[in-house]
Length: 163
Image 1 (cartoon, rainbow, N blue to C red):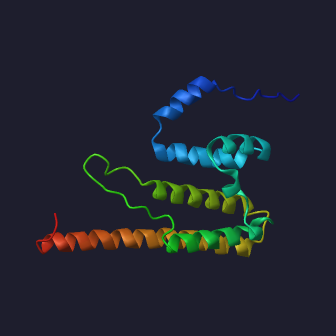
Image 2: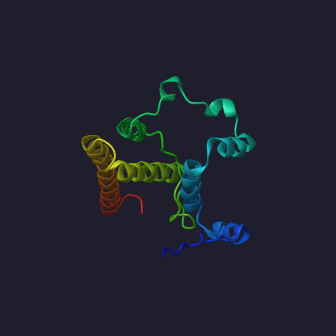
Image 3: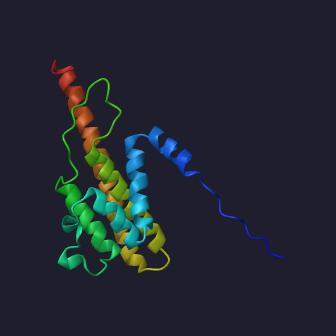
């Protein structure tokens, strides 16, 4: 005898209240996941309220679904070109916040990493590994840049520079 579980019901008002408590970057991540889950007709209905739909049409080369590796290489190129960079004035009140560009980069990174995991068993393993190597390489590069920036700031302070 099999028992079927009822899907968990979610009170939309309670969900909205909880979303309002989230830090903006988590709202960004949640929205990014929702975009993937929505069927095209519902996505169109929402998008047309907020955006010029002409700007959202796929480019000619994207009409066919690009491979995971193609998408990861495109992300790597955009990352290295600074397309996610956004100037962000840090002060004592916002030093723990992230710029919108950083939140966008993290959301796209996580989306691509999730695709790697999903594709691990059903796609070409060599391609998935190459995609993961590129993504992990970007994280390593980011850590190196952060450490270099910290070292430069420490050296500057030691030499009597900015504090």
